[in-house]
Length: 293
Image (cartoon, rainbow, N blue to C red):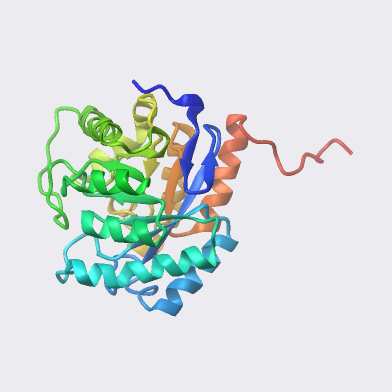
């Protein structure tokens, strides 16, 4: 178990207390992402999406230069081209914004941290063992994920676990402990069950309904469920029609203790999470006039 040090999560210039929910907007610098199909691949479109996300209430942005799943190979030099200058531009444009970069390469992690990234989102669970050192050297935070042993950019096939939640807890907390030992700040480490990565739909659903067990480890939990396949398969809906299912999964995750939420639809997520915060008693309603006048 982890001593939460009052439960404060510190990323860049921002601090998030244990009762606060942080919204992370997804900005893909790829031409082939599963959801937006390259809508923010062009630099001008990507900056416009950042500005819009901030105006809509995003606390963090997560920049990805490589599609997670199958697709054209992307070299490290191309990933750097897509991300480094863009991160520097965001930092100049939004000095207070928390910038995360989704990468599994230590070389990319070092360069984006130099450019101003505050958080390294390692969605492939330490596939590059030097990435944790890159985060530590830069003073950046780190997301520790679970993929069931898969190599980067591969999809799960007949994944089997005696207990998927226990496996996720064992893997992510071990990675978090390793990050701490390598010098990453305790209050900058998050764990992510990584829905759909190394998991089928039933396993991702099990993770969602038992998310309180991950929160009980003491490490802040990030969830990235937005428009994922487990929602689509559950409801038999394509990516563009999974918004309601996404909000349901986000709300359950928030109620069960998740802290950071990686999303495509910032205003919808912000409203849902603000309402959950009031229900949990960690925030007050914006207004309480009904039957009181």
